[in-house]
Length: 265
Image (cartoon, rainbow, N blue to C red):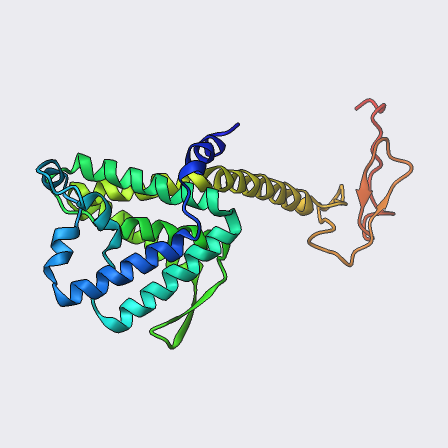
């Protein structure tokens, strides 16, 4: 039994059916309430020092904060997160999908605990869902700005670049959340990615070998050294009077010194 199977066994009793719908629904309600009372955003972020001080609701509310307050972009975000989450839930099944989300939450909590005095939201957990969807559907197209079609694999590479920049420039909380997000992704996809990498390396090695073999000329004139690669239309013949396997071009087939290995010079 591998690590993921063990995680599934632990998660099975607490798995939530239709988890994506539950998350999106709760996020939408929180988003509407935050429009009425914008201070809810700050009061919902995860700050471990404040949790220890008694604000325990932050352990859950940080997952409910949408990345934008703009109504148009918020609707777009809710739709995309719903689409990707439900697609992953169908791809994996409810148990494995819940394992993915729960592990992501746990790692986010640990990351926030390390940066105990800094505010954390669920952005990087949602970004991990995006990367997981892109892994299964690399050629899925988004209409960027509702106009420009872009394949999701390119957006995933952009997300990876954002991760790198965030890790370099962000405070401790950002660095820890990047590690948590990447760690969660690699836990569930690392084996397949490393397997693809090894397979790609084998294919590349085989192609190099085939290319090298293809470059070796089949025939080389023993006298002038032209070969079947540089002169593909030239006919090469082998001399039956020479000792050994020596090829000659048309010009030197009948006019060449015969090779006699037994001759004494």
